[in-house]
Image (spheres, rainbow, N blue to C red):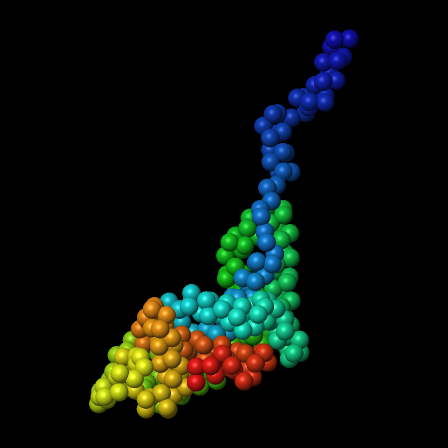
Length: 271
């Protein structure tokens, strides 16, 4: 009888069927560790990356070291002017324009978010990696959207050309791409003969004069943005002021492109 009970216990425990380390192997295969995943937050990150990619294309991808400034400018615009979310901004553009490209982008964002939510729940390593690096995932999404590359190239050609044409009224350039570095020096070279008779009037950025402002919308924006920061007691250089002006100008172009605001109010308040 004792032997019979021992046999039953052995069978239940399974000592005769496999080794203890095999038990461990089976347990580790069946138990997964889910990771925290905020679908709304991730969807918003992907949407912000899409909007940033649009702005980068408009700036001819000459955006080295400006990623944080672009992000902050877009988020401020979405919060203060659009009063919504980046994802909502894309959805509204899709609905207004009935655009297949925007529809595909929104669909891919939703699909990728759902896919990663499921992967996070199941502890999938690839999903976890993509959650931690949303910009890489966004790049993959954009590659799957038909005609997105064509749209991006048109933005690169048309809007960046508008920026160059506007600024080149006072700064001569030797190439087709906007130049965002060392603006102070370029302005000083173009303003070598300007005097400072009116220096007591308002706050004027280095190398800046009224003739420049009257000829260029971006120069007017730069002057007012630099003045705005000086009044706040957080002065910025003309370089940074121009970078911010160009980003703001491009956000205005995006508003018009996505039929949110064809009047480009975000630009108009600086003109």
